[in-house]
Length: 115
Image (cartoon, rainbow, N blue to C red; front, side, top):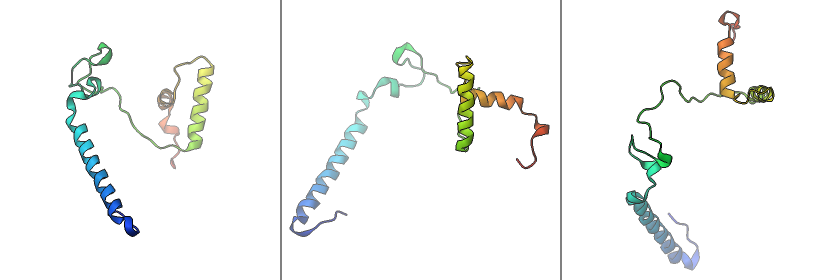
């Protein structure tokens, strides 16, 4: 509900009503404008998109995108290690690759019980 003060209350109420109506009309125009949407974004599955590439019908199954939380100090250490590897000529080094490498090096028998 709009807040009104003094003699201009009718004007403020009318401006709010016009704005809401305009917003609804604009929303309807956007939702009805399917023909004008960019084909690369709304292309049906299995169709060719911008650049002549074919859009995949299925998601890759050999990896998943995940989200994990890490302490900022650990992230800074990880980033320092990545930069060090890049400085040594390993130009494809990144957080994900270094974590994958570290997973392969873990000896489960040496992991502390209070982990």
